[in-house]
Length: 286
Image (cartoon, rainbow, N blue to C red; front, top):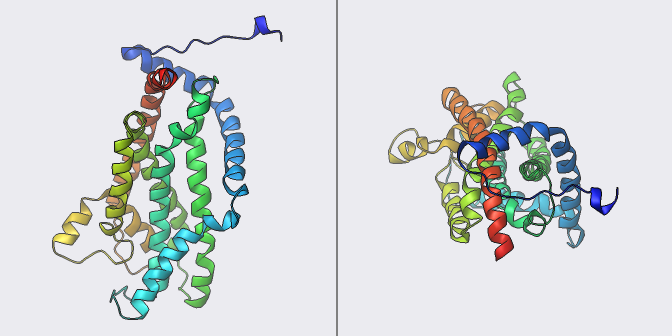
């Protein structure tokens, strides 16, 4: 194809309902190409991420493993005393950390999609929704790599098998979906103002202690009330109960949060496609 025959696309912001109509139409039209491009971008970014690192792919599992071992050490030396019921505490805290890693990683990956593609967004014409698929794929890879470390824990601290264990992958995916939804809703603003992104990273640190990750859900008191206002609580408690048992399964809350997250992801992708022309215009003029 000669240079004159190459299609030229002028990216201009759409207004009102027309912007959302165009976003929905392009998503449906480019869905197959988006999946293929997302897979190629995922492989490229993953290889580039660890190629220049001395430890390489060890960094996929090291943060979650180190965080779990710290709390296991503190509990084992009686520095802190946390009761996990009949479930061995090392297994309890690792599964909780795995679920938090799934949520936290999804939020961070979604927030960074514009920054990571900053160099190509204003120069290359491609379906931008594939950036969301790439971010979800990266988070899924980190979660699966962390889950492999659960094997030694289950070998050292056997857990009785029950059929609800088969639902645990559903819980992990629902937790990742919630993180992706939250991150996507913040992307249009965080791409313009880095202060929001920094505030979210700081909030995630506090959110770790406001979610029953390293301790069971309190039976009563202000802590229980606060944690019930945290949507991630329903995902972590229910998913961990499916795998380990011994906790209350908060199924109604789990289903509500999951359905809400799915709706927010769809809306978030739409808003992202509508906002990207404005973001690209600002990046190009900056």
